[in-house]
Amino acid sequence: MMRFLRALFGAGAPAADEAIHLYVRCARCGTIVHVRVDPRNELLLEFDDSGMPAGYRLAKEVMDARCFRLMRADIQYDRTRRERDRSIDGGTFVTREEYERQQSAATPRSGA
Image (tube, rainbow, N blue to C red; front, side, top):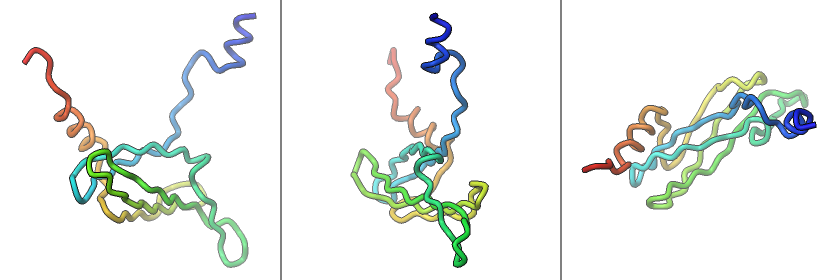
């Protein structure tokens, strides 16, 4: 019975994270924000002039926790959800490594 309940409620091996992870630096204060996007629910399907699916678009608003500036990201994907183009107003895209460096620099060290 327990095995059945675990299988029913998803216990066991964790599912692969299929999320899109964005890292955005605020142009005003420099804070880097991590944004997790669920591609199954947050990508908008776009159609060409003939009504056929042309690809996907992500229009995401991002706000940092320091100066509360609103940044707007726009990312275009092809039909297979591979990124084609990206732009952002009010910030810049950065790498995960830059985000992690900022996080480790902001974390107080113990024993100091």
